[in-house]
Length: 341
Ligand code: DCP
Ligand code: MG
Ligand code: MN
Image 1: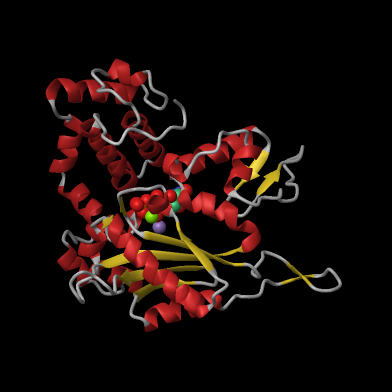
Image 2: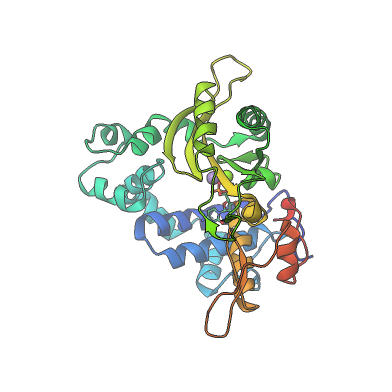
């Protein structure tokens, strides 16, 4: 049934694994973003398929699996391996680029640059001059960042973060979005979305004149409190509405042994909060689907607003949205629970 949660056990996990590896290669090494997207899409379609795929032809019947990928599936199923992947694994340059690109703070372009300069290990990378502070933090915690965060640890981090947030201002409310809100058993990072009832995208004074949003300093205050409590250990970047950093479980089963985890905290205006909640809960594939659907129906959708598009591409005023379901309704879609997204 469309929209129902995909089966828990993926009987095609081996096929998805090689498609994801090819996707990573296209993103980081050959830099063909369209090919990357094609592999990701095919992998997702196959992951959602309830029964074992036994041929490329069978896979091709799924939305998002084309001729070329079907051929690779046939090769994989009949030989148990893939020539293209074997070649990639045997190539030291692509190995080094993928290694460096896996470190927080290094994109594919930076990775390529360092490899071209002869850097092939993280030890050599750490010795380079001119690294940004983000890159240094990425290197320092690389080992921990590579690990997924078990759900029970996210529960603990969530509790600790929320306690600090309400200590700063009891009117602040927050939610952990991302894979956690979708019910995942582990997460790559912690995605916190925070709002305040008096923080809105536009403020009008008594004469109806629009003034700048207030509350600009509140996120910095929250981050400072998190640092004071030694919950946040490093800052990668901090703006008025977005903090990216590192946190640690203060109540880890063994004292002082909490792992270093990536955390994002976003501070969103109350009137735009449902749209942000929807967007930052994902999945990224659902976001893409919904934005595409919006365009087809003559809307423009992002994490701030849904607006009707006029004849000449002019955008109308933001439509009223009080909850996530309103967006599904505008798009004529059945409401999906977070666990179905
Ligand atoms: N997002 C998106 N498109 C992107 C990146 C993010 O739509 N390119 C949205 C959907 C994601 C959410 O933001 O669910 C959070 O981004 P993450 O990268 O943290 O992804 P997840 O939380 O879904 O997965 P993970 O467990 O790996 O963190
Ligand atoms: Mg996440
Ligand atoms: Mn995130």
